[in-house]
Structures are given as C-alpha cells and as structure tokens.
Length: 93
Image (cartoon, rainbow, N blue to C red):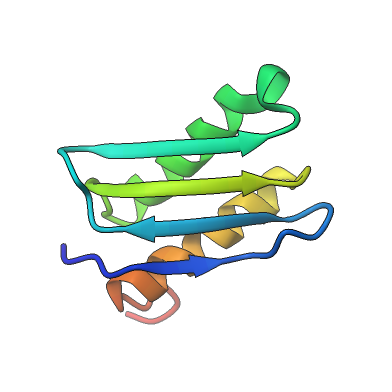
C-alpha cells in the first residue's frame, strides 16, 4: 500500500497529533511523545499499531504527540491520518 505524508489531530489538551509518512524501514516505526508515556505509552503504541494494521497499513513511520487523548480519540486520529495517507476510504466499500 502506497503511503504519502499525512496528519490528523491537534496539540490541544485531550487530543493527539498523529503524523504518518512513508516508511524508512520495514514494519511500523512509532515515535511517541507524551507526558504520560511512562504509564500509558505501551497502550498508546498498541492502539496505534492495532488501528493501522486493521486498515491494512503495515509499513509506515508514525509520529504521535499525545496531550492526554482517550483511546477513542487515538483510534479516530490514527484512522483519519491513515485515510489521508493512503486515499483508502474506510467508511465506504
């Protein structure tokens, strides 16, 4: 699947900014910046990976700047960035 640079989200409190770019190596590379990374970094990375793989994205560089986003917000932002990056509309068949 071809990936072009794309992003979704904001740096506002309670949100997450997700940037997706073409991969520089195989697999998903996730760089996470979060004040709660020590407590929730593993869960945030898992949600990003699970969401992208569910959309068929298995090779990309992802940068996420978390500002205390809930799981549903993380999934929504990752999905929006992936749709923009791939052009694949997940809301239509």
